[in-house]
Length: 400
Image (cartoon, rainbow, N blue to C red; front, side):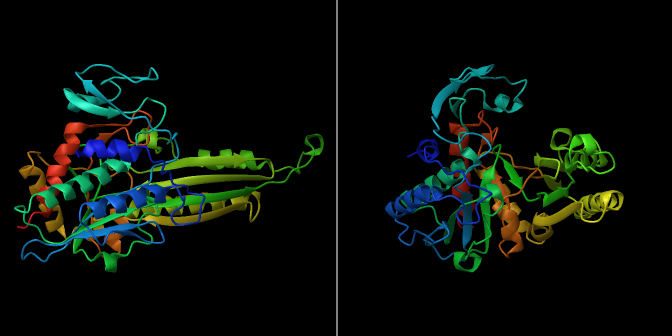
């Protein structure tokens, strides 16, 4: 079975995670795909395949040569819930270039989506335009399983021990929280969770969330002078105290941002949720301090306790760890080149399970899946790029 065929099968499982849930996995429906993967891995001969009580799938492919260095391959099973995630109706389309029209009438053009230019002449897996596809990261799962099938079918490909893990809840920032690094037993690993083929990502954002509660005072508007404090207006004031031009829509590359992801308000209470991001640790700490300073200034203006601020670190830039393990990156570069692809590096404007795992003692850069337009109804991936990633993963674990 080719990787895109597996993706189409996996995409039909609804595996959206839920940030509001405290359970792990955050949604029971992720376990349906986990059970399906365990069954498939066992059918491939990975007899120790299992899913633990938290929804993590683990398996191992024993070495077939003297190489004893264990390498890990990791992908996540969940998808975001910010756009409809079910029912996914994948289909294959030949893409000759130009406008790509989805079943619902949405039109994707190279002008709006330049990544289409790299996929001209290829066969694409697309949705009907009503849901996401789930290539983030079921494409990574499919490519790993297909690479295992290749390795099992061809004993002339010599390799050391290969450790496999498929995680829940990556999209809500908790994919590595209960990962059993010791039991996994790899010296280093790779997440397969990126975009264009050839990318190797070993820098990611430092990330924090800011949870803000603003307490107001409500009174009849006719008798409000000097008495009312409208929490909604204080929230607007707080937002205006942040600099313009530092939102996701204004930034790229190594530029950081603060992003208001949610606001709910009434006169007496308004809640705001921000995420803070920056690759540079010093700038990241400055962003957190600036938020604290704004809260303090508003409390001084309106009274102590008006603004409650909770800052919570989410993850840190894995470069802090990987700069001392660059042989892991060089191995991936070599695998890409052997598969016929020129590798390149780019910073992740987000995070992966690998960022947390690196700080947990498992150096873990991120490799491509071949997909584009993640977290979108316009998500797509090329069949040929998935095949290339399978070849890359096979070369990655090939004994040196």
